[in-house]
Amino acid sequence: MSQPFEGPRYLVPFGPKRVPHCFTDVLILGGGLAGLRAALAVDRRLSVTVVTKDDLQSSSSQWAQGGIAGVVDPEDRFDNHVADTLTAGGGLCHEAVVDAVIREAPGRIAELIAWGTRFDERDGSLALGREGGHSHHRIVHALGDATGREVMRAVIEQTRRLDNLSVWPETFTIDLVTHEGACRGALVWNPRHGKTLVWARRTILATGGAGQIYRESTNPPGASGDGMALAWRAGATLRDMEFMQFHPTVLYIAGGSRSLITEAVRGAGAWLVDKDGRRFMPEFDPRAELAPRDVVSRAITVVMHRTHHSNVYLDLSHLDPVTVRERFPGMAAICATFGLDLARDRIPVRPGAHYMIGGVRVDDVGRTDVPGLFAAGEVTSSGLHGANRLASNSLLEGLVYGARAGATVSADVLGEGSRGDDEFRVPSIAEPSRAVADDGGDAALDLADIRNSLRALMWRHVGVERSGESLAEALVTVEGWCRYVLPRQFADPQGWQLQNMLEVTRLMIRGAIRREETRGVHFRGDHPDASDAWRVHIAWHRGDAEPRMEPLP
Image (cartoon, rainbow, N blue to C red; front, side, top):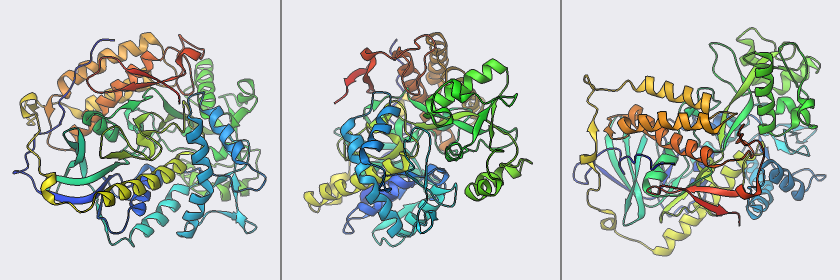
């Protein structure tokens, strides 16, 4: 692969004398579960600022339906959960990371209950569900199919008790600010105050995933890979960017949002059938509908091609209708708006981009390779998920790494002692000479058109099925867009978000081209088998023409 066009280090010019300043001990970028759990772990003696580009009710964590995986049943074992995670991960999980996170799960679930989370119960005990890839019932859930909403309600209530915490909603992070190689905070923007430099002794990145770079996605509009792009420009290593998990069952109805239909529906006994009503999963995997997500997504794609039909169907008609409606009230309500009865009708579904497995490389406490910068949650590559995330391990990862990152930055900052604000005053380091202003005149770009074209291209060429030829074609197109979009200076989030999407997209494509095998969620039709030679991480660093191959620990 040729050296890609490298955009500016900073998306906009700024100078310390031209923008307001804010000082905080700990800056957390992202208001989802990982970010707020980090805030709760920071020592109360330190000031904490949480910046989120929407509000605390709009994160991907809010959308999580299935639940949190954890060994809370006496008949289950940590070793079982570990084995299930390693199997799903396709040989790329870090075993020590998996073991440590899973052993921490029961404590984190108990913590949420202590904070007021109302998980569903049966006969006075936690009601445990089972999802694809799990050998036991171990998924705690809430409100039937709205676990994320209930967990975030409780966690948000807990953060409101913090007198050291400030939340900045509807604030877009333009760039991380670095000086002498270390992260010193961020440049942010909101409609009321414009640009602001937020100086911090430590910064925690918890901005979530990148599903919105695909036309079909379960993710909220804000999931555009911003945090990965921020870290990339600041010099952090990104890893395993080829691994985007596609959820097999996304509601596919014209005019409707691409709502995820939780894996717990299949765990409860739902079947996947083709357009003729024929159940097909048993022919692809002995676990049938309870196979891991990559297996089910690939099977659905094969059946769609075979039947020349745009989707397949979930069939729950053989299950007790009262139980179905009680267990999945949210999904039943969504289906009802389109005249469908979840318990009796066949529900049209197809795969959609769901969870970004790759991301910013972190160690076991969330530390990146940029001094002063930590990360937690979906924005990271921690070693937990390998090449394919096991269902309901994502909220668990956010809880564990959020808590670890918050505790570690506290120890770091308190260990350094009190310092004055002068330490944060650095020269203007923007690069206005490398940018072309987009002033909205005749030369202005149609950003919505580029964004829609990008998302369609990613779905066609970098979706569930991939090939070297198709990926190469996609890379040429994206590199072309990068050459005239990345150098521009935009004045609002629409432009900055598109620039971030392009940066992340081409890393994903380059990673998919480089990995000449099929592993986990990465399926190469021209390389359909896994190879031991590729049991490595593909790590990218800004300025390098080629990635580094990192062996597993």
